[in-house]
Image (cartoon, rainbow, N blue to C red; front, side):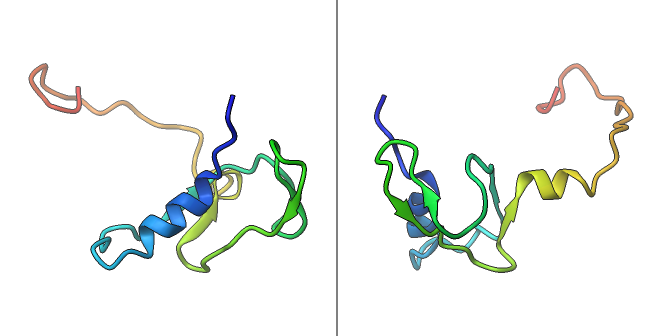
Length: 81
């Protein structure tokens, strides 16, 4: 398969003037650290662009939430059902 640099694509889209709704980007860590990341397809080293206050590591955010998620009663016609 072809390697697609998704994070840089998201950064480009979020930087567009018409993109006013992206406030948070959750990033899955496939490699370690922000510096000297080896691109999985090219084998080249690069650094990951990071926007403080917008970009968050998923594994770090998951540490802050409770594992218990009680069910919420819903109607059968509810769009989220």
